[in-house]
Length: 60
Image (spheres, one colour):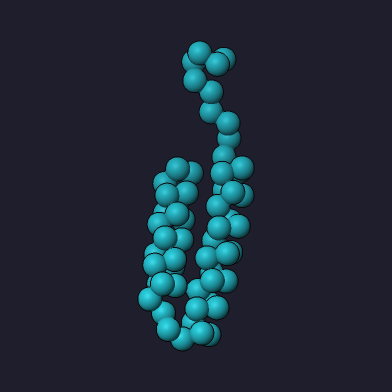
């Protein structure tokens, strides 16, 4: 799996958890979902930062 695909998958997971946050009524479940989203969002920039810089032919 390449980095772009992993990033998209992570973004999809974040979106699913955010949608679940809107539907949940249990305060404990809401807190857990918010923690999950926070951790996933924190992992997202790390993955982007870990990606090698790709230059187009014009930038080389």
